[in-house]
Length: 143
Length: 452
Image 1 (spheres, each protein chain N blue to C red):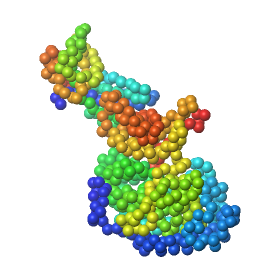
Image 2 (cartoon, one colour):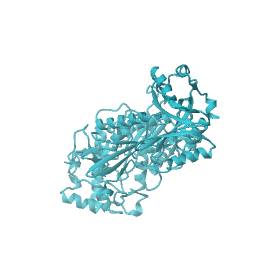
Image 3 (cartoon, rainbow over the protein chains, first blue to last red):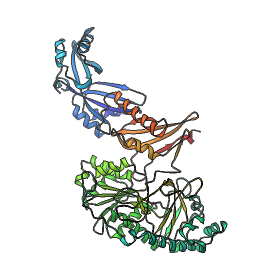
Image 4 (cartoon, rainbow over the protein chains, first blue to last red):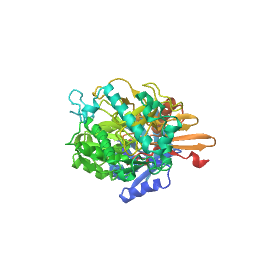
């Protein structure tokens, strides 16, 4: 789908050293991470990564024996000011778009990048642009 | 013979049934009964005369070999238990001097002391004949290439299959178990037609081949797998058939009685034909030890009819099965036993409920999201038993959202609850964290005793 970027998702058991092993594998392969978040449960965690080369990250981790999948997510540029994310989410809410999960990473300057996983993969480009936000293209993220 | 390689399902109109010993395998019922009676008299006499254990056992119930007038008189003879074999360690149940034994096999003895069985040259030939029947019924003959990936050694799998290959004149590749990548390479490069190993190892070979980038169902010549030494659920059978493009037949045997070949499925995959010229099968109620009616489940008991070195009278196997009624379309007249539904000593008692690992296997085979590798861990939490089932998801399973994993766990838990009436904690683990087996898979880890 257009305007979506690849997030690397990894299934990790809650075992000592697994997260470090994952990061080391990516480091050794020369993959640089822009953002990482861990959703944790009692037994396992789900690690979500935005990196400079998702395909290479996926291949590297699979070879190292991890369960990996690529997930399509939206990356949206959001002004670095109070209430900006609320504006965005309200616009999505009015359009009846459901957000599965979200996380932000700040970059230099006055913009932050918000990553959104949308239920049902529906395209939210128009909704977002109408609300005055900008979707980031894959090349802007990976490079 | 024609096998649709993409599915492993045979086209039953195009395959011609092959027999290794048609005159025996298609023998009329009366003739089989006559042969069994004649051989039963001889083996009773042989045991009584040459094995002090049996002389004493027969005398203690007032039984004399000359009292046998019909097959029904078998019920007057005493049972033999696994413990009797352990007590006889090493040669006290041999009916010939050990110098006349051509080979010795022994069980691993992990659950007690080892049981030792001996074979004369004639015993080995008979064993080979039994296994050769399995090779013929999957379409094999003297021109077949059979890859034996059962372990070679004291375990009867490897050399039992090997013996069968020798008898039928096949080309044997004695790989033994282990070195799975090499196993795959040989399967491909040698153009093996038949694979003989345990079901869990066949699955590992299939998965390894796929991981190595092959499509064994279409790229490999292998058309049949003769799998035994551990239970294989129908789901697992179908998965192996699909992945390797083979017909899977289940072969049964235990080292005490002989080894693989005591009974074997035919291509109709509806029960295992017992080699009734070499063995008498009985199904008894494990509590009363009375024979049950044909078709009813009970413990399988075998009497060997031709073994010279280690004959056994009414050996209680602890395996649970039943006789399948009716004639088989394959033309073999030897009676069929059902696939083993469990072992009375594999049975887990969890919070007072009887559970067979095979039942758990059956349940998870119904979930396409998980692989067939699983492990059951039993622990105690205070006075209560705790069961944890570890499963791995297939690579295609999309786990990006936590709720998908939770939903899968919930559905497996509910299915186990409704099938087995026990609560099981299901843990999804990382790929390959469940140990892959090259022989018999270790499916159950019981930590309850250690915690006491």
